[in-house]
Length: 294
Ligand code: NAD
Ligand code: FES
Image 1 (tube, rainbow, N blue to C red):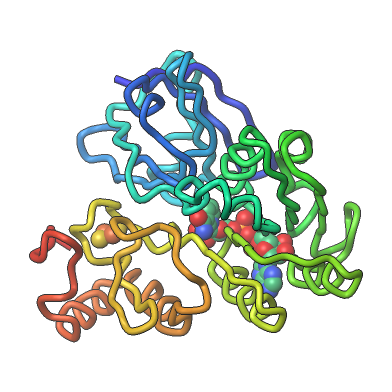
Image 2 (cartoon, rainbow, N blue to C red):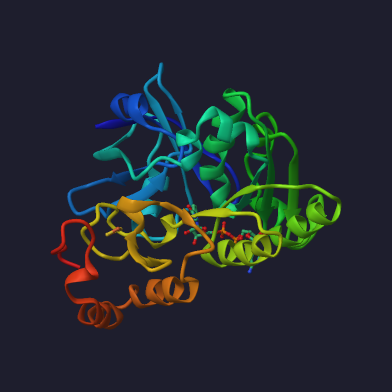
């Protein structure tokens, strides 16, 4: 059992929990995720690790209650526990694998959209702790949905906040801030964008204009997170990849966005799922090659 040590509401729709999971905390790195499950019949929910404390043996997760499982998570209180908390899973973010020389050459821009602010935080924090600076843009639809402003400010080089409706600081979506920063003469050579799929797609279209290589996190298309259900299959350049085992982070310029977004919609219905299994045959599933029950 994995005890919840802290529970906090971060915004109108987003919750944070600090969970006792010493083994995960000992081994995890920014960019990796955990699978959280409660109850025998509970759904397996992949959540990117938002923070970790190796000494305390804790992992921080951030989630938006959308389906049945995450709504049940929200009802848990400090002192309650999750039945399953598996991880760290997925490949760490590429920043942790860069050499010192590479890191020194990088001018980082992180773009966080809505709930995607949570997985951006550990990467910016990791860079800060290793002596590197990153500019960060956080976009939220309204002021009520913004969270981690102070946490991000304490680790970012410069923090730019924008709201779609202009209720706080700047008015506009995250891509408008990228355009403005570049127009002001800021230069970047490495962008990481994490948020809703549509945002990541449009960030890539924007950064491509300025030739800023861009990494995105395909966590939103994961279902079981183990390489078995086939849900997170995507085309990256000429290759077929699975977000949960080959990612979750990929070169955003190489992703076939139209296919990924259409596929995610099809996965939501039994009929769409059956059609995908038929079309994709043996390659439908991830690493195991034969898939689970989906
Ligand atoms: P949201 O819809 O509130 O959007 C957040 C911000 O993204 C907006 O304020 C805006 O600045 C920007 N944005 C949205 N659409 C845009 C567009 N077309 N062009 C430019 N910018 C745009 O986000 P939300 O409701 O917090 O997002 C929830 C989604 O985020 C879920 O679908 C979840 O799967 C996804 N998510 C993704 C990750 C990840 O790892 N990629 C992590 C957590 C959540
Ligand atoms: Fe099921 Fe990746 S989430 S195969």
